[in-house]
Length: 176
Image 1: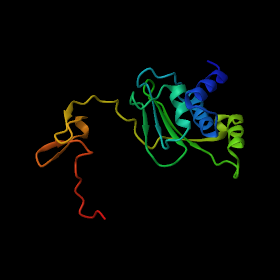
Image 2: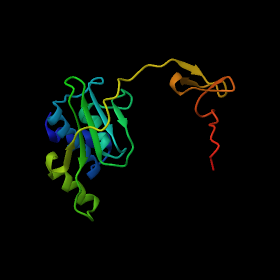
Image 3: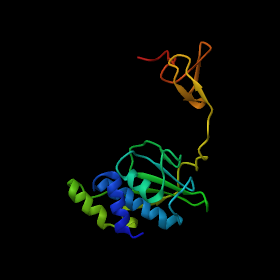
Image 4: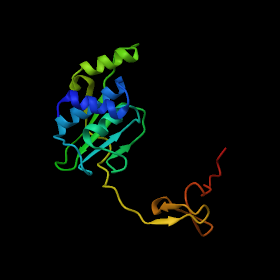
């Protein structure tokens, strides 16, 4: 699919054009080039985003990474940085957005990022985070307080009862 059609698809998914969407779009294109990626039907491609901003939507559209599939993960650091992994060939890369000129309007930012080549936008580094394991399936339990079904990995035991994290009263003697 050509880049114009992919951009249109990303904009339709996201809801509007913006510089942030362009950042994720170019990051995904660069990752495709560097790691020989294809759209991920399952968990062949993994993205760890260090932000939860607009660009993540373009990554979902272009690469098939999603929270529900378990191949879109967040390591919230407030950075325009993305780590991409190709499980099929073992390649990985971390892309960090380079600094841009200051004091741009939203419109200027969109034009600026749309007109740059991905290699002009990102510093390429080795990944900092090891490739996460594939998503697991967990048994479910009913919380013995609210009765809602919760995955076993989220259940906490308190006074002999299985509780969801909403009903569990965390113990912290230093809580202010």
